[in-house]
Length: 505
Ligand code: GAP
Image (tube, rainbow, N blue to C red; front, side, top):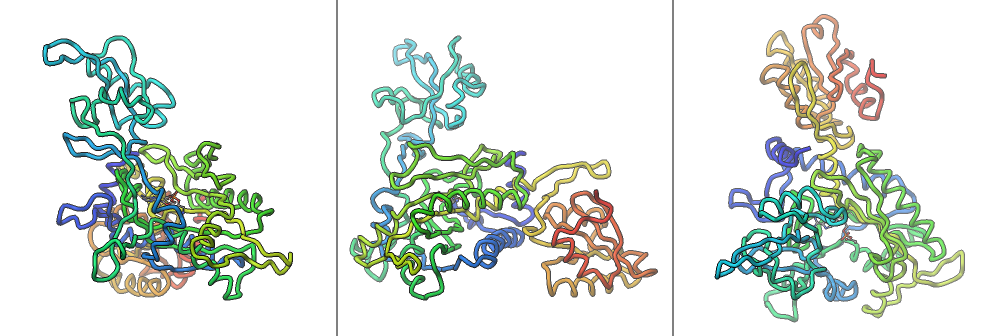
């Protein structure tokens, strides 16, 4: 699937717009339009219902975005939440050094005296996968373009290149070698000031994750007396990271929403709970339509693990721009509660009535991104197929996520059809997000809804006048069948609940 086509559909149909577009936008910030807001809300609501409402061992929280800055000292974000960046002195572009891969080719270029000198080419076009595979078509193409002789290019992570050789690297958007600065550490938290004065004493941060609000409230939640270990606390909300290189549409944004769970359990049961959440969260994406062959559970190896974690896995999805993280499931031990206990001086241990023991619980953290999930479901849903000899673009969303559940159409604007269709629309609207459309040829109206991902069409036509039935149409198969107009609400509910389409195998 071509990412440009999806981005253009998202704009055209009102899913996602660049933020403040009339002023030229702002890199890394996005707005959700009328269909996008419904889609993302349906995803967040489904996540909340499945992980909080339907469970006996979970409660929710909604914490402030700006917290006491000590929270971020305790969590390690003030000291360590940074990425290495390099700047290009010529173009002023900024890159994540850990995401740069350099095509190393013998590239003879003339020096001041016209003598060929060897230099290296860098390209952000290469990826970690390219580097793992070694010389690739892409690298060889680049090497050819620059007239490199026989030897194929190799690909190295920029940070692996000896500092003394970095001056040979040509930046991604220049032709000159040696324009890149040395990598520098860049803290990703957005800073602000609380109150009227702008001084170091009132610095505060926009939260870079929702998780710390949960840890900071652990004692409050336990003291309400509603919970007993094992239990989890969930939160959905905005997070902010001053990403060096926002890219791939909404995938890496500077403002985004997270859906996080901190699940507190006995230390000796934590490995079991980790295995449970790892499997449970993977299955959630499969159940909502992500093809399992495009999904991957990648366990972190020992080098990648944080020092306090015994196990972490990423749920990855094969986006059109590469396989990338959707959600992480981390076994965090007692690290976070321990840190907050140390920095706040408050006792955060839990008294286990059954064991008659006091301890710091262990934590399993399934941490998902609402915007990344929305993007993955959009990528998965996007299809071009042939209908009636024409190519149509359709978004095949899971009905639970579809922004509009059904569209109601009068076939023509006469013979009482608009009035009958409007009555059906009003009856449905009390329970579902539905749409009424009487403009244009019926085929075009169907196509418009297909592009917006509406799973069902309901048409009042000539036969409705004769026998009181309406036509139902299924978005994916385009199959049509008739339903008594008095039963439309129940019929739609059954279909959205997963009842098979009449006539489908
Ligand atoms: N509390 C753990 C934590 O925040 P993370 O891997 O940094 O872990 C969790 O983030 C999830 O948040 C990611 O898997 C991703 O879905 C989402 N996320 C993180 N940074 C993001 C960004 N810049 N843009 C969009 N989503 C992001």
